[in-house]
Structure formats: C-alpha cells, structure tokens
Image (cartoon, rainbow, N blue to C red):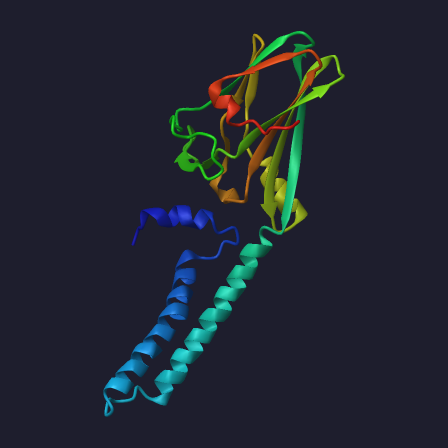
Length: 231
C-alpha cells in the first residue's frame, strides 16, 4: 500500500529503521495493554465469560515485551545517530572594501514559493532538475562581523548531526548552499539543500560575513529575517 507521507517520514529516521517495523512494534506496544484492559472489563461485567487461555495471555505478553525491547533498540539507534554535531566551513574573499556599500538579498528558486521564509521548521522535499529527491530547508542564518582586514570575506559554516565524527562531517559537506556577488550586491540562497539519503540530520548553515570597518551594508526585508543579531 502506497501512503504519500511514508516516504517523507522515512527521511526522519536517521537510523534507517524500517517504518513498517516501527509501526508494528508501536501497534503491539500500545494495543496489547488496551486489549487486556478491555478483556478485564468484560470479565468484571460478565462473570461467566470465557477466558482466552494462558497460552494466548503469555503469547500476547511475549509479543508486548518484544515490541518494547524493539522500540527501545530503535530509539537508542536514533539517538546515537545524533550523538555528534560537527561543522565544515568554506572560506572565500569578497571584493568589498572599506567605504563600499554592500547590498544583501535572499534568493529562492523554482521549487520554493514565497511562503518558504525564515523558519527553522520550514522544509520541502522535491525533485531537482536532475530528478534526484532533495530536502530543502530554511535553517539559514546570517552573521555580520567587523574586521580590520582591507577586504571582506565570507565563511559558509555547514553543520549536521551523525553517529560519529566522520558521519557528521560527511553530512555537513553534503549540504548544498550557494551565493554570488554582483555589482556590490551579495545574493544569498534563502535555503540549504541536501540529497534525501542524508536524512533530516539537523542540517543548518551560518553565513558569516566579515566586513572592513567603515563598510555600509543594506539588507532587503527578506534578508533581515535571517539575521542573527550580535552587539
């Protein structure tokens, strides 16, 4: 049976646990205690009601215990997949000097619409131009700092979770984020993207812009909502 949300739900499972197995364990873990409560209620209301037998009782108890153990193991695997939070930074110079005026604008794309604004919970799953299943996320923030250097620079800090250092760094490096400087206007992506095989691993991007003292910077209205304010 094809359920539309099942593919998306699987992307939240960083531990690659089969969704059908999680659903089955959950059904038994919750359903069996309710069944026994219902059974006891029937026994109280009807004195001569038939017993389901010890074999059935112990079988259901065994299935319930297996389900609880299974959910515990799956839960531990999911938590361990987010044990490490690592980042990877790409650095580059910007041809902006002191006394220049820099404009900053956020850029969307054909996949995303105007409702996709700054919100850590905003995400979208869609196929890109190559037909690949891609996760789009709006967890992007802008940090502006002053520097004594004569030329501006930009640092793209990509972060992600993983079960170990190497896995977290790999997921961070697999984050796609683009920017461009044209005529003293810096165009920044309003989103980050990553292949769906990287799952939802708390991916985020910090755009750190180091500007020489004396530079004037203007943000358009959309860009202001991405600012991470510092003193």
